[in-house]
Image (cartoon, rainbow, N blue to C red; front, side, top):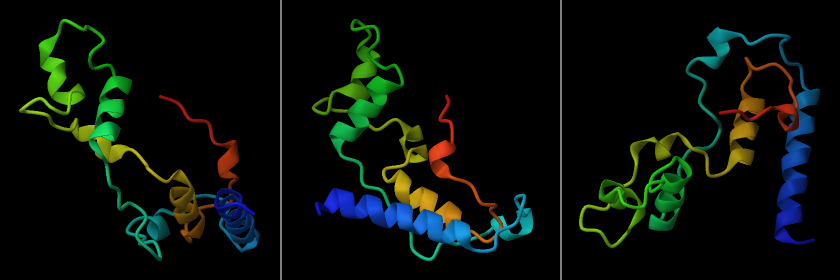
Length: 118
C-alpha cells in the first residue's frame, strides 16, 4: 500500500475506534477546556510559498495596481511578511480531527460529516 493509503486507513481506524468508546451525548465544557492532546498537533511550518498562497486566497493582490499587497505576495520584496491570521489555519486536518476524537468531553461525531463554511 502507498504511504497515503496507509495514512488514510490509520486515520479512519482511529476515528471509528475512538467513536466506539464511551463518549458523552453533548460537549462537557469542564473536560474540553484545558484538554491537552497526547501529542502536539499544532506544530506548523509555513514556507514563503504557503504564505503567498494564503495571502492570495484571502484577497491580497485582487487589485494588481495596489503595491501595498506586495509585502504579502512577493517573497523578494524587502518588507515581505506573513499575514498574521495564517496561524489560524491547519496544515494537517487529520491530526486535528484525531485530537477532537481523543478529547474526553467531546461527543461522538463523524468528521466527514462536518460542513466547512466561511
